[in-house]
Length: 288
Length: 289
Image (cartoon, rainbow over all chains, first blue to last red; front, side):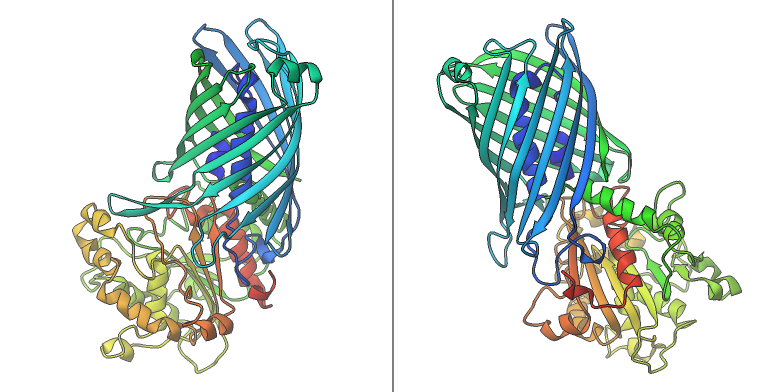
């Protein structure tokens, strides 16, 4: 769903991304894994012209900057490339993603993240007549360079495996029956380097994410979104948490870019570590 | 797993790659919905709409005209006829509900396609929201016991395409109705779940299949100000098994679109590319997937 895609995009355009980059990744997986309706039955398949289920290759970018409570300014650029294909006449879909972002932190330091996801298999249609949601399983690897704002490591290489469930929740609001699409992701992170594992104190770090988009399409606002991101035992026994609220605007369905205002708060071991406000411009994907 | 944005990008490219290469096979009628008498869902100055941008870009024979010129040589020569309803309503037009609009649609189409007894679909009709009910009321006598049945009949349509049409009503219509002008109160009432007018639609749903060659229904996947849950006319596979087969029936949800407005279903390139492909192909689309 484009709302989540926009709200929880991969961009690490700010300092907060240096430690919670993976949360965006998880939420983003949820978006990518569940956007195409899975309640297909024969004759109700592909949204592409002619019913083709061809491979889709796309690239997208995002640029933005953020200000933290310490009045520092971070700027960043992110890009992602995706490939999608349908397997088994739409019963299962496969995708892979390569993402990269770079940022400049307050002291002029350069950081970045590279992530590769393969494979991600998406299954839909949990029930027959009533569609409850869909599930995507995925695995991947990432290399992260953290220049600042990380007490533990400056470089980590991780492998991870997880699953994202996107639920269809019908509710009635002032007489209107509206379906919401929250996503819940669970992931385990394993560090490639022994020294990092030793620093973390655990071989596998549990990682959870929850995203709730609220479309506000009537007013040409793409939507309001909330994301909760939680990494267990991030610094030994500490819990890293992030709450993010985002408001995204687009003037037209076919607009070349969208504008998002994001605010986030991060806590490490219950101590507030960072508050940040960021403005991000997301360029619509291009297919090739 | 492509995102809605990626699907939009794919379909935009599909449309651009076919610039000037497709040909309309039949005359195309575009019908707007409730509170859209000027057909803003199809045509808005400066916006990338079907009527103003994508149609002329893709089709080499896209020759559009609005119903203001109905009956003129320009109307007769056009390949695309945009139906608009005059505002304020003329004294002769009650505009009580979609059946009144359907009668206007019927008269406009019948100028060029009166019923000739042929079983061949002769034109394509696309309706947004209530516009699809207008089209249905134009093709069928929704209330055969009334004078409706005596009105001029239309030739059979080839493609009947509906976009987020409330075949069984709009759940939040009672609230929406409070914000609607007096002249639209009857229209809103008719679109309320359980209305007598929609009971007629349900009763005649199967009969529609005898008046069209192919039927395609599009719906939206996201929440919006008008949540239409009944866009899938032949959702009941048991009841409509025969109609689904004979009309090559397809139902598709368009992700990332709302019911109307600039982010609405008629502006989505996913909808547009799929619809353009539908009206230009003759093979059985429901078996391609």
